[in-house]
Structure formats: C-alpha cells, structure tokens
Image (cartoon, rainbow, N blue to C red; front, side):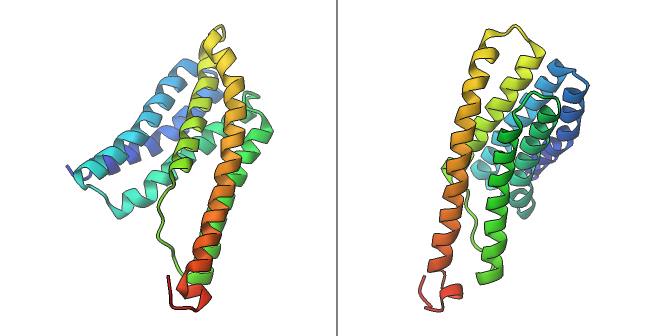
Length: 189
C-alpha cells in the first residue's frame, strides 16, 4: 500500500508524452482528459503520502519533477502549436531555471539544503495547470465562452504569479544561504 503514491507519480510521468502527442495531433479532447487526470494525480499522490506516512525518497524527488515535466512539456507543445505566448513560456522556464540554479549554487556553497516547497509556489503551479488546461479546453471546444474569456486573464495571472514566485525563491535561497553556518562560518543557524 505504501507504494501507491509512487505508482501515481509514475503514471503521471507516463502520461506526459501522450498528452503532448495528442495536443500536437490536435486530438484536444483526449489530451484534455489525460491532462486533467495527470493534474489531479498531482494532488492525490501528495495527499496519500502525507496522510498515511507513505513518504519516500523516490516521491520527494520524482513528484516535483513530474509536475515540472508535465507543465513544461505541455507548455512547450502548446507554444509550438501557437496556443501559448512564447514570452509566457520563457517566463515559466526562467523561473524554473532560477529555482534549480539557486539550489545548485546553494549546494555548491554550503551543502544540500533542506527543501520545503513554499505555498506560493504550489499556488503558482496550480494556476499554471489551470491555464494550460484552459488552453487545451479551448482547443477541444473552440466555442466555449469560458475558455475564451478566462484563458486570457489566466495569462496575466500566470505571468504575475510566476514572476513573484521566481523572485520569492531567489530571496528564499539567498536569505537561507546568508544564515547557513556552513557558508557564513558563524556556526549559528
């Protein structure tokens, strides 16, 4: 039973390529179904792991990796299909590079830090998933008024939240590093 969250995460990883292929092949309704399933699995595996203590090293590493891969592969595919503005894709990629870059720099300077996702980052990921899902919904049902009116607003929300989230992570890594006794030599934390 304790491997259920890891199985769900693995299934999410396995859905990424089919989602991208279906979007590219303009089979948006099926892509929407798989994207929706993958997006829901993100919350489910984390809930089960925390609720029942089924946390594992695999899950700690692969759950956020699966989330990022789902977001980025879907965003790249939608950009290639002229469904997502290129600048928004670049902003999403730049934020992820800043987060990973901050982790790498921190690790090089002071050793591997304790990683805890911040609520704002989870919220940003949720808004990004809604935006991408809305774009796929719009492709699947072109006359859907909701998708046509909400998606442009989500572009702006995603841009603002992604920018603030990226800056927040830069501030977080920097402030933690300054206080880390392994780096600053004070022996205090």
